[in-house]
Length: 83
Image (cartoon, rainbow, N blue to C red; front, side, top):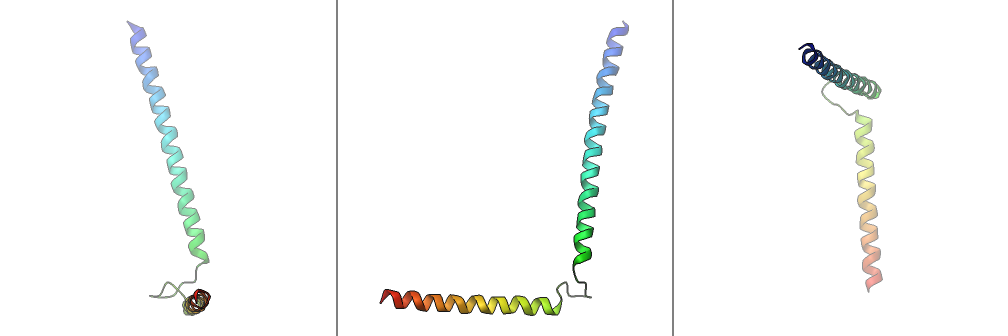
């Protein structure tokens, strides 16, 4: 009579410990993710209302303009090579 009760309690204990291990791992991953996110956000320049600094926007615009110029030059060269 006592054997089924002991086996049931043992199975419940194992399930409880497995659930606790999974929950602990999930919470550690969540905390690590937030810590990494916080550390990465601390490196970014912060301005009120504008997430990108004005200098960074100018740098991106310059890269876009240079890419467009290189595209036009390569299209001209390709058109010249086909003639």
